Image 1 (cartoon, rainbow, N blue to C red):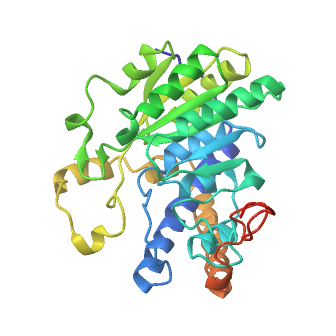
Image 2: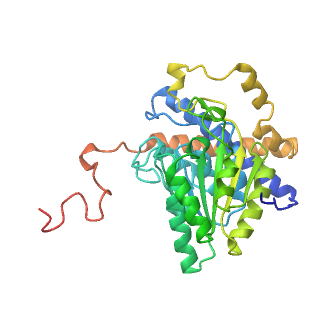
Image 3: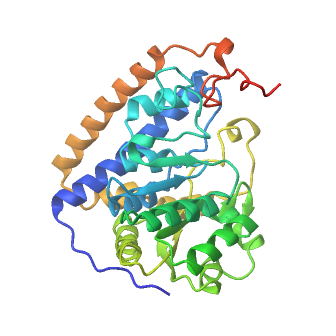
Length: 331
């Protein structure tokens, strides 16, 4: 087990945490509207209900720290500071998107915020994150690398290989498992032998399970893990117990899978991370933040919908450093 760092937050910090959670919640709700209108054609993996994890993790990081996201990663990007307008344009596949519309909802990156990728292959980013952490450790930059994955990844071989190298080389990487209780529709209890933290402990990685619905609990765990990583004490695994209030993907609006009871949903909604964070700010400040977030997202939607659609003729642009043409002598 690892110890959470005791923290005392100023009110301005609590206001900021609430604003980030509110921004993520409303951003995702705007995305759901755009899916239903047909403007966001890929659909999304909504993270509504899990906002406190991304917010607490990012709040413990510096701007130069590196992040690897997952397929349910919109909250990670917004919490790390990605611009809502260009990020939303990216999800819509528009040319003014953060990756020129090439990444979409599933595979975006934001190098302006040191978010290297959001992988759709479950668990494989753990090994990539170990490589990035080895690189910054060798360079002596003092950066910390964070890597998100879900409970569906914890039995993947690539993830365990990443754990092994991270521990063996005492790398400055923090693994965050967002345990939202289901891998698509498979309950974690029916898929995971032993425990999630036990996987980290088996490799000698200090591991802890925290309440992922409470942003301050997540921030406390992350603060301790970041301190360890910067001190050269190696990796940490944080399992954040959380819950997604909507389906695995918006395709469930059509297929209407039935794998969760209404009672279960109601229990988790009683611990809504938005309301927990809102309870720590004044009603006046909450109202001001809410209004500001709506203004930001109004502009984001306008910017994204005004973006040019991609031209199929240049689909291979940005794929190779040499451009779409073969290298001289390759043929």
